[in-house]
Length: 149
Image (cartoon, rainbow, N blue to C red; front, top):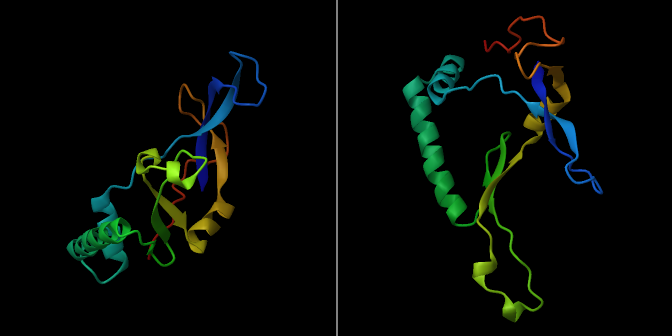
């Protein structure tokens, strides 16, 4: 499976780059979206659960995941990976000077599990023309998505 990318001209982010300098960088061109409803149907086809059963389970997962994250827990999702809330802050010279107002907006951090990380070894790249969206090699036009049996 190929990850499609295009080249975009952006500000040169290199250290000591001259003012106004630009370079071409790769930008991933997503190949669509897997809608939630379709994902529930696909999971149902792969299992003995109905699409409604899958949705109920995923809704329950979201409910308990939000609650655990707000309690400051790391949510372990087995082979999928872990979720946790993370923050950063401005530093102070002494602990007494530190105020909660120095903490930046919290983020939810996802750390993929080993099985998800392993798919990165299978990624290949296919350059597309930014103007037309056409490929410049790498794919034969066939649908190379895995079939769930």
